[in-house]
Image (cartoon, rainbow, N blue to C red):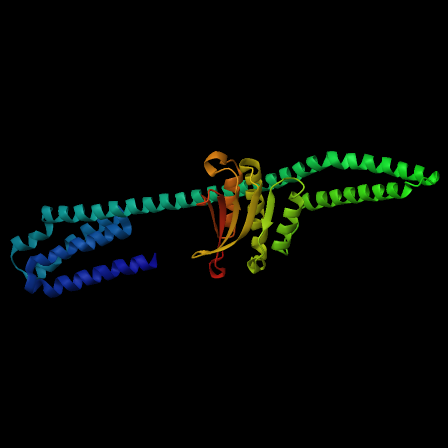
Length: 334
């Protein structure tokens, strides 16, 4: 407010100094300087400023003309309706422009707030979907592992009874029964370890090791070969990015196994101008035949944005399908 008042006062001082100083040279044409002044009033105070400034210039013009002329006709030019109307027209037009600009700014700020609010809601929803997906993944693993676990537990009990019976009868096959019992117990323990590793979410300290472990666990669930190509850049992935990248790779592998039915899925790094690219390539059915975009791909895209990257899905020249996550340079990371 103080700045606006100072500008308005300065405008008046400049107008009065200009008018009274240059009247002998420019005569009554100096009165045209009142138009920018009234426009300034309209811009700073809108319609009230436009009207007040216009009518305040009338006595100023009268004094100006009275000081420099004795001609009554010239002095009455201070009340010229055309001049006053011109001032009102320009000043009110400026006031209208100012009011329109302020209304536009208010709408723009409201739109920004709305976009920000909706973006936050979308991010919350996306996080919720990711959490649901993780819960669904854990539930799926638990369901898949439940039946073989029960069967192994039953087999373990039977093998234990068999072992005890053969031991009590001093049967020469008791050593084979012991080996069978230990083998079933080891299988059951491995199954429980898989369940523990796949139904809990823990921070990823070593991404490459985690991916190799995931590939090893998938070996018994699919005939496809999951190949993690060794690379020192796995260890360069920031710890807060590792979980997102791990989930992107897991989702890409799952989509490939479900829709493309490949024999090989390779995961490794490639170099690009934008940064390093993690590529998941499979030799299964082409994208046109296998692509069905559900929630998996949008979630992969979202996770890529969380690490400041981009998700690319394309067909390679050899017909393979490639999913790439562009990892930005360290200086570009969010």
